[in-house]
Length: 395
Ligand SMILES: *Cc1c(COP(=O)(O)O)cnc(C)c1O
Image (tube, rainbow, N blue to C red; front, side):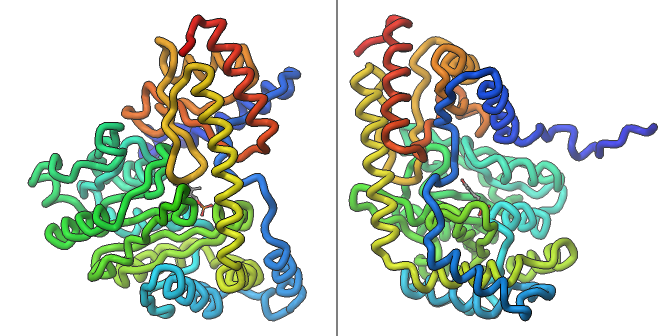
């Protein structure tokens, strides 16, 4: 047999979170009471009126046929209405919105639509691995923008060399940020847009957590910046704000040429998301009271505070994130991130994700999520506290 796997996969490891899932299942099978502070997936259910809408829509035979390629008019109009209401941004539902089978799918295919071999893509480090992996598969050149504590986990555009910017085709940004929990303000987006306009490249803003900001902070959409639609496309996902990760529904919004190029890849690849799911997605966008989002954010704030304040009492000082459901913590022992995560799992059953899975700058950090019930978070804190005092670490 010839070697089957394509050469373009030579530098592509299996998806890190699939591997972490495997480790979790193995520990559970071995009888460990695992507390997974690794899960980037809301634990609370989708609102009932959204589920009811899906049930109704699924019973309507008009949804049983192939969906419209670019997404149903109903869904795209709902996205446009949502952007007007939530961000004060005018979006043409026909040319500036495309329905996605989750934003992960859209992000991956957008890279295939835009990046030629040799094109530079500016990618934060640490970052969601999809940006980097698909850039590599397309033969693009990754230029890493380090996100460090000192710069508030924002990239320093001034440090990117001129010759790199000239070859840049695309830049990824993601705020509120996974994995650091950092939030940016509109001024930062203004700078990014002005850089992209000057050098003529596309910004892909991953807005998966745009609804999840705490302590009176409101996270902006990059499309709020005047002129941004000429250079920016935003990925808005229903997964995290509406507890709909399993449904696979999101939208690409903004720059027309990018949306149209994405359409060429997608119409030749998939045939769109089930129309009934799009109808339920439209329902979520148009009929969810702001109170629901506020309530969810209160739930996450309470859990965050239990986690961060509990760890601080145990001598592990982790900053309180202003957004997302992730805390980005310095490894409290002289170990690599991966060694620490493994040791903690073996000794306590608490799982955390080594920062190195998001890039070299993530080494020295672990990510802790607060998508579990408060009782479970308290148990995790208590186990970590015992572990740290046994290791001789105390405030
Ligand atoms: C969860 C997540 C996504 C994926 O969202 P889907 O719409 O469910 O595919 C995208 N980007 C980041 C940074 C995420 O954490």
